[in-house]
Image: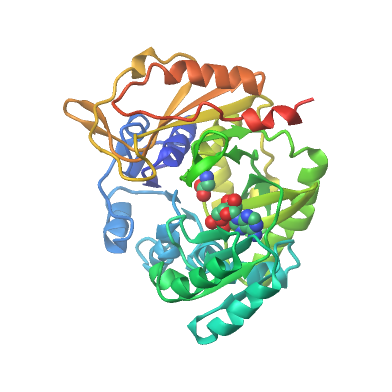
Length: 427
Ligand code: AMP
Ligand code: GLY
């Protein structure tokens, strides 16, 4: 089978690494990919938002399946465009059509979906510039902290959590005044949930589902979870506070009602669902849906999956996922994300990198890297994820941190405390 994988991050490197182990894979193309994905297939310079260009590539290269890594092309209708063209309509796409992608593309749509299907989530109301005064009055009825969310995609920056009521009211006005462009034309205000977060991943064919290994990621740039939010600085799987009983609640109260809800609402959905959850004293509550895998969670989830990923994708395409069981390693996988100095603020690109060959026992998943004639250079804020499997979290982390030392580039930074907060949950 020839597969076209869309995306260029650590997530896509991990998906490419995993798919390349399948006997079913003939050719893998990654658009646009990075220096790491080039080890598992051919990088191609396609713009995922140029649907005509993607469709032409599919027909010219006899592509049998398209796997979409990031959410943006899905929200912008890449799957719909492939389906609408008689030349490409029979090529399965892993990743939902725009209608299903609204679970991530519109917070208001996602909240209404959860309410309709009795899926546990924070209470909320949404507001537009037509009812700012009501929004301010609603804020005044809530206790701090106040959670304000831009309805649309805002590159991970559209959620504000504020302690002061006047500041929350001011931010509400600014958001509705275009702070995040049209993404904040509607603002969701919701109840604050306190607890500890985790990421649960589901693969579905729209009827059945398999639950993939769960993971915890580390979003803040600074140690001790301080400083600015990033795309993610590291991850651990499995998550020790997500035991069997908790995961049973997640499946019964969230995963099954979500897949059933999509079907009841006549929303076709083939692909990943990433449920961002809060464990509130043992009770799972949904914070958000994403219509893709997480990054850097994929870099710890893929190494733990023992089943053939291409076979699972094929079962999704043929709506046979109900026949499948997924085999998962009992080992712990940890990843440490190495970033560019200054990230998530401004940072340099094009810095030469060395040391890849000295890495032993870990898997390198490139994120923001690029192959040039003179070697690999940095090409983004999150540069490379160093993932390791171990009999315990500490063993896996020790291996990643040992190998991190080999990867050298000017201004490199990483958090030294990935997974430390989990110590108290291991028996
Ligand atoms: P989101 O973009 O929806 O993932 O939100 C970004 C982050 O804000 C989440 O990862 C949570 O840490 C936090 N967050 C979002 N909604 C809530 C909530 N209702 N209560 C507490 N924290 C929240
Ligand atoms: N690591 C969180 C995300 O991918 O959104």
